[in-house]
Every structure is written in structure tokens, then in C-alpha cells.
Image 1 (tube, rainbow, N blue to C red):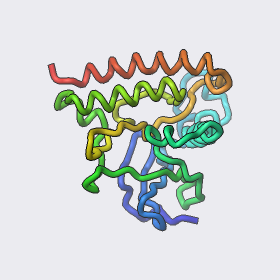
Image 2: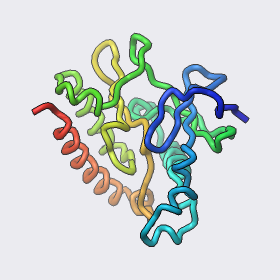
Image 3: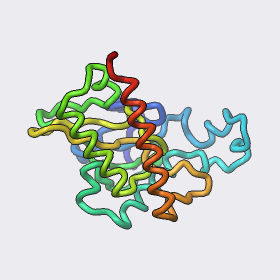
Image 4: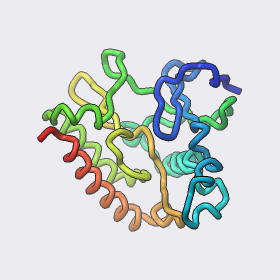
Length: 205
């Protein structure tokens, strides 16, 4: 079992803590924050979902299922836009999702789009975003939402590699988009449109 509880996380997101893997420096371990577990979220629900089992509200389980589904059709191309998945490991903070830990070419941490776009769009960043959007549609990469703060732009020697690092998975109660390529394409295109709108709102006026 990995001991993470008394370590400092690299990043703190709205749902998870992200730790550097104690045995693999180029991997990270993502665990749910205690206030974002399925059980914790169930207590706060005011709609019909409060009557569902906690696992239906567990984003960790949803992301694990999404990665396993991606693995059934994974290619090297996929891992350019989603961090490579290395399975799960038990930790003292619950089940951990282990993925590739991304760094810029100079070794620094990449910024997310929410941080970058407030300073304006550059041709290199725009090219990276367009490549990413095309891949999301063609590879049917399902996400709960394409939120700019869940998408990082990794600086490479010749531009940006834009990647979805969190929020992978299907939020549908009945996962039609997982079962059907037709529904997956419709859903990804709808989320891409919303993503573009969010990016526009972040740009300086």
C-alpha cells in the first residue's frame, strides 16, 4: 500500500489530490479528496441522486471505468492527448489512479488553459488546442466536461501538446455514449462546442 496521507500533494484539484508516485518519479497518483467521495457527495445532493448508491457519484470509479474502456481501443496516438494509464494502486487515502506525470520540455510543470488563456491566445497555443479538439472528436475521448482547468498545455520544443488530465469519464447515468459510437460522437461534439465557448470567455477583451 502506498503511503500518501502525510505527503504534500503536487496539485490540489476540485475533486482530487495529485501526488508524485513514491516509487516512480515520472508517474502521479490521484486520490479523491475526503469531501469529494461518493458518500460525501451523496449527503449534499438535493435531487433524486441522493437515493442512489454512493458508487454512482464516485468520480474515481467513473475515471477508472473510462480508462479501462479507452484501453480496449488504445493506440499510441491516444496517449498524446490523455496521460498514459498505469492502472490503480491501493493507498492509505483510498484507491489511487496512476498515470504519466507530465512536465514541460525544461522540466517545469505545465500550466492549464485557464491560466494561459487569460494572457491571450498565441499561434502555437491555438494550434495545440485545435489538434487536441480534433483528437477528442476522432478518438471519442469522453469527459464529464471539457473544462479549461482540467486541460494542460505541455510546452514542447516545437509547440504545445494539449492534454486532458482530469475529468475523464462518462457522467451519464445510463452510459449510452460508452456503448454507442453514434452517441459518443454527438456528445463529444457538444462538449467541444461548450469548450470553445469557455475558452473565448477566458481571453482578454
